[in-house]
Image (tube, rainbow, N blue to C red; front, side, top):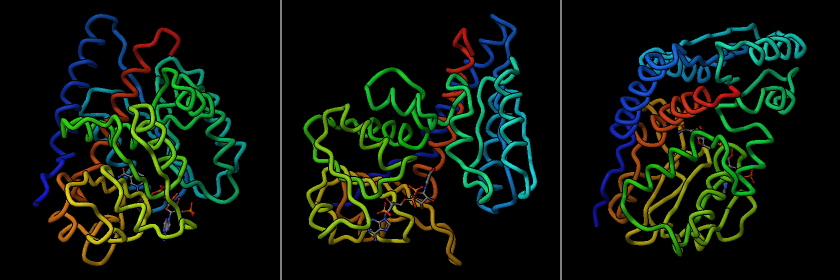
Length: 283
Ligand code: NDP
């Protein structure tokens, strides 16, 4: 079997067109321009790239974009002060603090300081709790993008074996909850999992969010599985996912490429979340 490609770049472009229309409609009917504030502390090269991509996408969609670049030495109190100001600024509907943060800053405190109604990343404990409880919430961008990609396959999720490799708060755990809410039977694997390949081989839906280049090899994949590669690994040869793409695409029924799979969807979901928050009366 040769896999169909789950083209995240194409789907993300379609979503961005829809968001742009939504922004224009909002401007025309209410006079409000949705605003996203992005805060970058320090100069982590990957973070700079992500922030640049987010700002560009924001402007293309017609949002107001407020970029705050702070030096790596910024004290935590100063960052919390900025967040407080952004929380109270009516032109800002979404606040995103790019992670990771420098060591003197506690990311949990910073995330908790963002007003949940302005948390477009879906990382605030209120949104995490609501996701856990199955209540409406701002869903985190990468897992939400993964679910959209799975929808694109047209395959049902109910009753399927879903195996997620990785248990981070930003990808592994939330995508597990979202798959569970669609009635998949979910297994979460991590670095202490014994005989990981046996778990992986059971998967109808296999999500790799590990951060290790080409970790998932063809022998770990069931014939016909849907394979979602979240990994972004920067090697000399370029960007590489967590899945050994060539051999795995000979076995999978659907697969996301890297780049051009989950990555562009993450940004599209960020825009969608920002528009959604801006539409809420309390934002
Ligand atoms: P984390 O480093 O937070 O988590 C990695 C997870 O992989 C951990 O749960 C870890 O297990 C697990 N893991 C590590 N080594 C192994 C192993 N040998 N066997 C099994 N499990 C292992 O990463 P993130 O979730 O933040 O990101 C994962 C990848 O996805 C990265 O490449 C990142 O760049 C990418 N990413 C891509 C995004 C996109 O938009 N495309 C967005 C976010 C991330 P344990 O918990 O036991 O340590």
